[in-house]
Image (cartoon, rainbow, N blue to C red; front, side, top):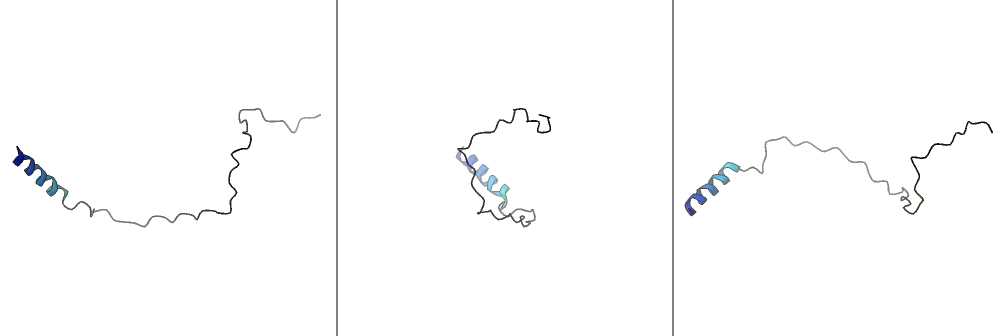
Length: 62
């Protein structure tokens, strides 16, 4: 049984055939935009806005 497992292990290594090299072509990844360090942080203590509320009609006559 140990010999059979050894044969399977050898077959598995042979099947890999140096798989770390890969055959796909490598391309440069697109450059990422720099992080804006001058941006103000979000105020997490501010009151949340009710997005389901009806908008105020500013064109209505008084």
